[in-house]
Amino acid sequence: MAKAKATVHGAVSIVNAIANQKGATLGIDLKVEAIVETTPGKGIVIQSENKTLSSRLINKTVEKIVSKKDLEKNKITITLDSEIPTGYGLKSSSAISSAVALGCAKIFKSKFTDQQILLAGVDASIESKVSITGAYDDACSCYYGGFNVTDNAKKKRMSFEKGPSNLIAVIFIPKNRKRGNLKKLKVLSSVFDHAWDLAKKANYWEAMIINGLATASILSSNPDVITGLIERGALGASVSGNGPAIAAITKKENESNIKKAFSSLEGKIIVAKVSNKKAEVHEV
Image 1: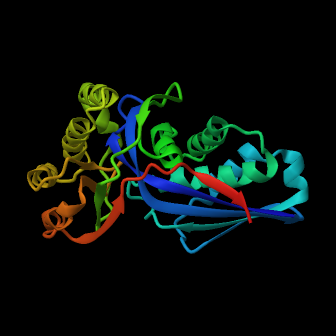
Image 2: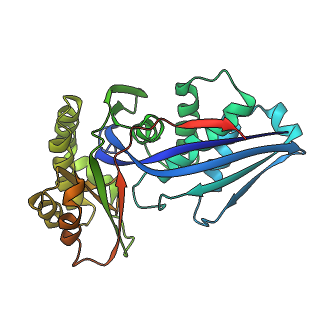
């Protein structure tokens, strides 16, 4: 019998990876905690307050780490607690799969590297159809924190650095959960390529603004919102992931000003700090 607790944080998009399989993300301090417990028996039991959670993703992630032999003789109970709203582009599924993988590896595969743990979640995301690209960019910022610029097809971090700790993300969660047609993002693939090149050169905010205007115009948000946020002092602003959440990165003292830009829209606002925290796990 063993028990491990893993903590992984969320992230916001700097460059959306759907068009070219190249993305960039930034860690934020909304967290997911996964407690993995083994008892004699078999089967995977998932406990969570959140009913929209993908149990397929979690089961697949467990199977990527735990061998068939170990699954035969252990009942694995996973208790999840997440501060990240699901289905809004704030990387909840990457954070959840990484936390589950990390907790399982602590018990069953103590020699696993960060990359092996990360890839278990990424591969599980693709196989359970939670993500089109496997979201390697999202997984990296959830797992390592800070800025991560990735080539998702190669599953490789091209560049990474810590994010400025004096910044916050003001995130708008719209009441209407409608998402636009993701296939259309490919129409602007050269624009996303340009944004990614900027991110790779550490021009993150410029990359994020270009990404914001491009994704907003395709995913049925209003691009005016992005412009309004920049006007009010956001360093960068964009639809996060495939939306519909919109994230603006700004200095702490600018928080109320940024919130005003969302005041005419229906929905709620959450504020998170930029996070450089790496995922962690310990036995409990």
